[in-house]
Image (tube, rainbow, N blue to C red):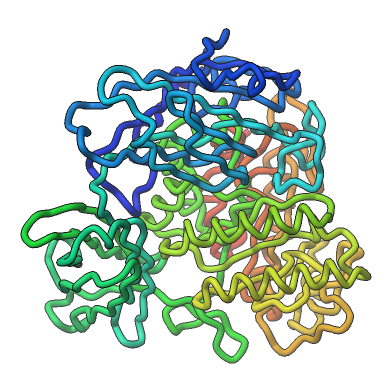
Length: 593
């Protein structure tokens, strides 16, 4: 069994020094008959089981590892606050709880949240005991069989099959406490502008009404050397400032961010009242620009070809939760070692620690929503709310270069003929653009696009000559219907936007005696290499594509079409994969049998 270690600071782009990690053992109980609220379990009921947070009960690392449906679960933990927290405002944070959560502290309801992939927090100061132990109780309710729930790859049946995997119910990301002053920095929005060599900063300050002379000090460093600073007077809850960075030829300090050179700037925010420091937050940003110029995808104003891998974000022992921060780093490192410059994080809003490693090590990411499977009015409200929270959470990460609110018409299965579903997809596209106009948005990845900045195709064809013919030009790609689905909804027109093959390959290669499936199947190392070459070579050479995404990084449960096993062991040498991604043609796998 893998030993869990999730003690790292969970929000690396907005970091404070004063915090308390609440991961570890909690009391736990199922509430299959939904009597917990009526019986006031939130007042301090002792629960009959133990669970290791932040791992869901379905996972091995939780200590429970049961697959049966238990849609209502309760957690309880006694917490004693450090003495230095006295007089501070205490903020209780949850990285993610699937799907609905209610939180009580000492019997007082302090938070309610809907959405299984996004964070929430609550100021719990008024509910706390001045001294001694405080009881935190969480009630989480999932809807395992509801196919209108934004759920990603979580299956609505007890046993995984096809492309659907084990469910996650309850807490699955870190729980922690922060101690802050009444006035503190609540959030910052960092927008790089490489054309003017400025960083645009919007700060959100809590408690401004309590002070008359608040100032926000901002210091920006690169590789340990201070290169820019500013101090602004805080007059309102939101303040904006644009800070000019040193020119690139000034001491050689300025750098753009890219997968090849993932340069990051450190930024320190200090909230001051006179000379007294009320808050200090550390963050970072990358100076990079993603744009589409005359139908060409550009990174930092230069054409850039995206070589992506599909990454489901499932982990041995932890289901959706990585057993350690090191495994998140390992996934990013292996992706880069194989020659890819990006990942399409599929049907999951990933742990911020993964995005941190992509920022730091240099890996492009397509930020994708976890979709529902069927359409309903309630679904529209659910996904719209959660998607806005996801975009806000991840806006500052330089690694994220594309937003994907919908995939393969999931949640909109009748979009081809249903005007409401078309309007919904269009709304998500324009909503995302209204929240972030700095990144391209794909309305419905794979097929049946409405308006999109990049048109994408999913195609698991394995014949080299067919792939070469189909993607020779963008126009031929747009006219193709490889999965029996139109690439564009009738009534929407192609105007020269970039085209990418955002799913292909999916070749199953099962080593050993395990069972599983893929979109096609290899019998040995040489056959696997031959099949990979047959799909990679024409796609890389295709004149109609500006990038691709190979399916997929690892095996996941019954789906055995990874380049790596589920335990992150390469099925072929890393060097072989790197040659393929670079466009070379490895001849054999001699010595690998």
